Length: 122
Image (cartoon, rainbow, N blue to C red; front, top):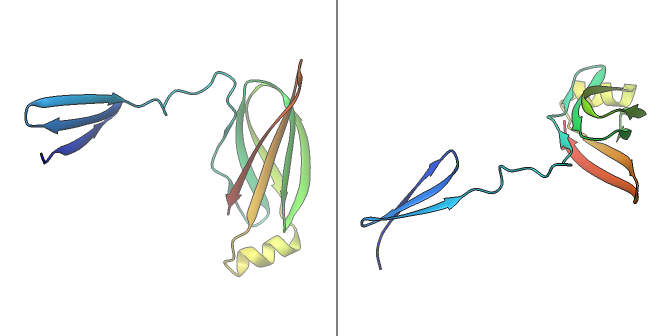
């Protein structure tokens, strides 16, 4: 059995084996043209902040225990949305407890509605 070492470069993985170089390109970096990107969800004492990038508009719903349910209509592009933290959320924040924030984007297309969801622990 031959021993080899692998080194990762920006675009893929290169494995070096006794003079043979194998290159495996990384396809994870390419995104679908209609991909929705949810940024890192952050929580302050009074707000939950959700960065969002979408190629098409739709309705965004932000829900969580301790966060006021927020529904916002957004257009295509990059947005930063905020949802207000309730008294229960402030108590959790002061007690250093984490809670799960659910973000759902529903886009209306010609063939029907498409829903993208994500959850984040803040």
